[in-house]
Image: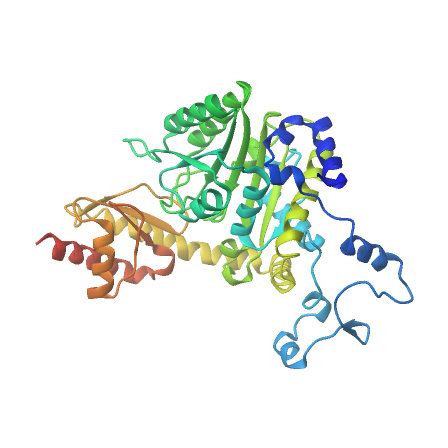
Length: 436
């Protein structure tokens, strides 16, 4: 039997935007944030001025108990910002700082109504939350054929989604908006609900659409919604900000937010790659309802269901990583240091393109368009990608990723600019070895 708190949230959605209620999975409909220990502890934190015997941590001398051997390594930080549990939704000061950052870096979000970012244990955790809340077995997801393999594990293996793929690129080398739209229309006609995942810069291709292509993607989504399909649209912005050449310079989240009542837009971010702090495992999930006017009831209900999902799985996200990311965002050196690293990454990407455009390797491969992110992909002319991958490892000590029969992914993010020529020379030599 459904918990009354879950029923209450569902009623909020039914009154404010019933399409969002229809989008929820069976689990999503049943999720709620309990009025239990955490709620009582929060009340006690405000009012228990004599003794607070609610929260399950050990205290000492008016603060959290800790081991000095650990604090000695973290002496720049106040123990209260490291050791206690973080709130289920994450530190409010970090959530506000990230929201401010999103508004600065995404002009199209200005004036739009969207929720406060909720902290996740990096972006993959955000994908997992989306899967739990919105994906039932048999639901169809629209994705390009060049996709991150972990989507299969997250959505198909865990939740039973059916991934419907479209060709990523046109013959001319642009993002294949017509194929995307056709596949989306097919799913809409069959199911009446579609889950769209937009990952730009794309992993594995390293491509971000142009402004015109981005506008065409948004127009296609709106048209399908206007035809009566409920759409959960996810922007996986893991590599946000790493835009090197002609492309969108912001997330499509802003243009999709508040676009149509049948469109729920979900932005997933990770400080992990944006701020070069992969091991901190700090990310964010942000919701935007499709209503033109502010619809706080929808955002509140989704936040509480999200917190219920977090509470039921990991309880809350690690506090130290949140503190470290917040301190970085507050630093006066943050923007300049981030720009310096961006220039390094851009230099590597442009050097890859320069080397590949020399014509030296044309007999062995072509390459897919790339203009952003961490990666690019070779399209091999004759040698199978997996065969080449193994040969490169065994004979030359070079690691690459085979993402299909013909496609080899190269992470230029971890190759120094001066080593890029040698890398591709070795890959070319390996192809020649296998072609004899």
